[in-house]
Image (tube, rainbow, N blue to C red; front, side, top):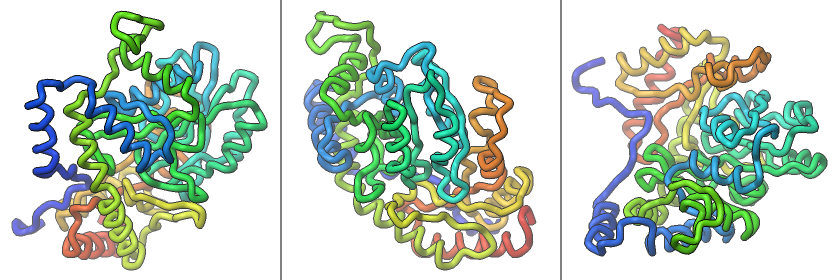
Length: 371
């Protein structure tokens, strides 16, 4: 890589003066823990991204998964069907409730749960399905809901990466009994750290509120054994500003993705189902037939020769991690873990940047993976 090239990072949080001013406003108010900013953020988030559903703000997306599934009654002996091609938090959230994550394979084009695999995994111990709207593409919610209804299961949507994505016109996180959105710094919008839980019923929302705040809604009137998973007003103030910017950022992600779709060669570009709106948390290509080592060499060439950063999400399927190791054969998941590579698609990618990204990928691909 020449000295003149500035690295294009695979992700870049966008924090501006408005966010700083919002934090200063909260600090000046003297009320920095959970308070009016959190309440306002919940209302605004519900209206913008959760179809008007009741939402509960928490201190991370993982906390949202954990508390949401506890609120749905998940406990020891219960099974929840999950993808293995995801971040470990998807399965961790089941395990820390005392449940057992049951791993199934995914669609090779959308990277989301394969309904046929879900159907085959249902047992008498299954209580729920946790689809992940991976990289910003929604899972096939209609088919998953049909399976759930037939077997008496709940659906908890992991929408950590999919703020504003839709399936059949419905926003993700608004279709199952509950859903989670992450507000981690690298997500499509952030609160610095945090998460939201959308709830289909007021009873579920109230239980999440109890669990996030030591089991109480009224001070010292503890009703259940709970946690300290509250969001602060500082984080909510950041999130409120980011929420106002999200639509424009999403449009830029989609524009960048369309440019890549039109110009990349020698790699498999993302598929978008006709019924889906993709919000491109990641723009994930596949290097068809590559080994993990060849894919990693491809990434090294992009970085060192062209100044283009990239990421691998995820190099080790969850069912191969020490915490959950099983002998299952999930061939699509294993293939994707070898072949996927995510390119910069965030709103900070300029027109000049995306020209360089296309040139870099096409040059490395034409030389052979890892050249």
